Amino acid sequence: MAHENKPLVGVIMGSKSDLPIMEEALQMLDTFEVPYEVMIASAHRTPEKVQDYAETAVDRGLLIIIAAAGGAAALPGVLAAFTTLPIIGVPIKTDSLGGVDSLYSMVQMPPGIPVAVMAINGARNAALFAIEVLATTNDSYRDKLVSHRVTLLAKVEADNQQLQNRRGGQV
Ligand code: RP5
Image 1 (tube, helix red, strand yellow):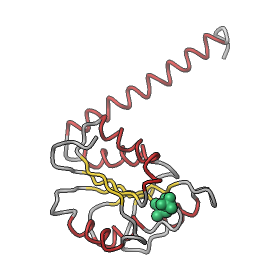
Image 2: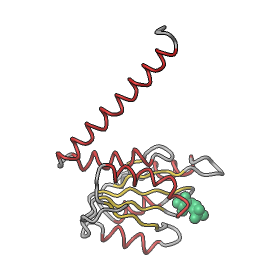
Image 3: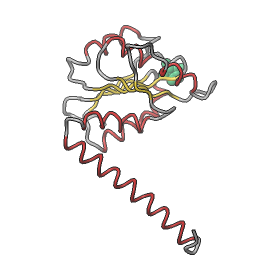
């Protein structure tokens, strides 16, 4: 659910088929109560739409953009060509090449036009990375990130305790 406040994060994906993966990013942004906008647009099928999206992003108040695509995944790089906002790329796993095609398409940007690329299907980390960028100037997001890490730590400790209990305390 996108928030009513002015969006700070743009989430864009090349196809509706990317949405099941990108839902993880949207859920994470919702959890942190980060206002975002979300759109489907393709660097190859709707190039003018992508250009317009990138060129108007600063005026719309966006601070960072998450871009997901699969295959010949030009979307993050094309966005980066048309805006100086930081772009986070999410390479989507593909049936043909397992997402390595998407990863390589995003990660080998020419010097001067960077894209911060996550793992294949790394939608959750893309959202967290975006929130970390926002947290450099927002104490509320920083506090929430610290709480999130405490939760992660507690889960590892609980899982470990459960394992130890099952093994009768043997290491
Ligand atoms: C890319 O092509 C999309 O990002 C998607 O991952 C891939 C396949 O798109 P569909 O054929 O499923 O629409 O542009």
